[in-house]
Length: 276
Image 1 (cartoon, rainbow, N blue to C red):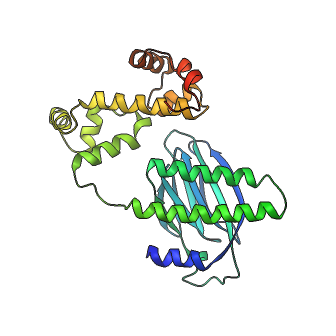
Image 2: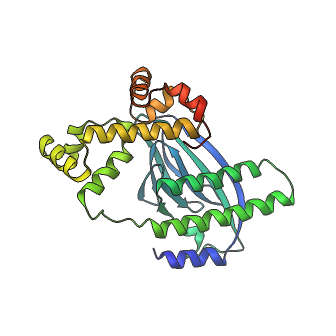
């Protein structure tokens, strides 16, 4: 799909917000042989967890940072992947005064990949949309329409900055893999096996490239993510623990205090919603 042509279609289209939904689906859920909603296009914006969507016989694996678009009346199957709850925003919009031609937005399904910081910006816009749709009247209609166009413009601007390509260096691929699988609490041997390397060879090569042993690097990333979640969200200590790969919240709390000098609950009270 030519992105420039797609952006041009949006620039010429008359769009209108329909409705946005915040949805949580339990692990193991699966829906087969349905269709997307009639009369509206939609963006699926992942927040947490993973899911596999099959749209018009094309598979899309969705997780935070991978946003799916689909048109109305499209064949759809979907299932939650893994043991985590699947949480996402479903944003419906209408394309006014447009026939469903082969090259129409109504026939488009695609994904856009984002960096983590870009995902945060997109989530802020969706939060504004969710807040605005609680209001009534013409002002609400105008503000949500403006936010919808802003969302789409941001998605394609970010997409140009975040091309889907293989990293130039193997270590970049390893670091990305660790970041994306933080919740899975992978061991160094599992990561080495994924990249078809022996454990000792992997650890030696990793430290040579990064200056840190892989286990130390993973702990640093977990700690950084924990601080981010504790300062910028209202998640419980147990949920923060789970999201960085610790099933035992007590074990996580001990690690956090040993590394920072304070308990995670104290850190949250002092730095919650503030930069650190």
